[in-house]
Image (tube, one colour):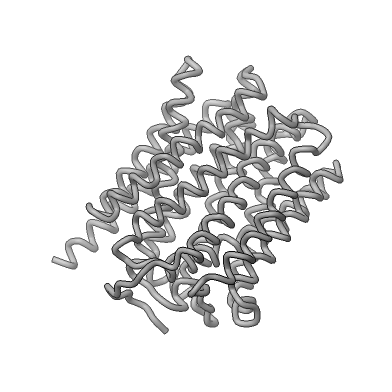
Length: 391
């Protein structure tokens, strides 16, 4: 078992990196569309914010369930084939949304969508760090993050084009993801590397050895899912149009995509812990500022800063993961990230929705920002302690 990474240098596996970024972009398009679209459709059907949050929580439950099966799966099926299977599963889940209108069927479909997305997420992260030398890790992680954010930005654009009824947006996306699965098969045949296998018990061993990285992903997931799931409902209830609610998610993701390569450069040339702390502070403060803004333009600017800053936490965690771990621990770390993402996203979607139902609309983003700031404070304490021990 490999734990600490070395400074070994090698040429990046470009075919593998292309397959990884293409696959994870497809997952992001699916998530970028389904989170606001499902929220808007259910809101239109007069479903409560709490049940909308529960539906989003089903996705998070699927993410978590897959983390406990990834070790068993990766030892029996080659990693690149599992990624393709995950993409096909995503396409079938999206087709279910297009076919049925029953709330509980959507909950089941969203649970399985979470499972398939989690498989793509975990193996893609592990493959990326295997195929990339440390000298380029921050910048490649930034490109990987940009691919995810571009997908998030592109997904909601289908809402004004296809509308929120009749299931056309879901059907279109199912076809798109199936095409990406085919392209991933072609690219994986040219790759020199494969995702590593995970060993039994490695997941919890990683969480115990790297709690700060796990905390970073929890903070990112909480902020990210609260923004893309609860905030469209927040805007609709304040009287904004469905188009504005959908475009806000695109604005959340577009500056994020542009910012991640820049964040990657800073990660390769400055303090990785410092970049992490600054990202958390910006994300939390942006959330808290939203209820106090009246101009639509100002709200969208705050949303853009929020998206770029919160996703930077994930880019930082992914870069530090590849810096410190190799081999089977990369898959374990990716599984831990998926589990942390599931926990953070479930909390973000359900807690913010419940707070808005119980107290007030403004309490939702204020609470979300406060949680992110609290988690960032934990990061500051841990990084400071690590720095003192290393001196």
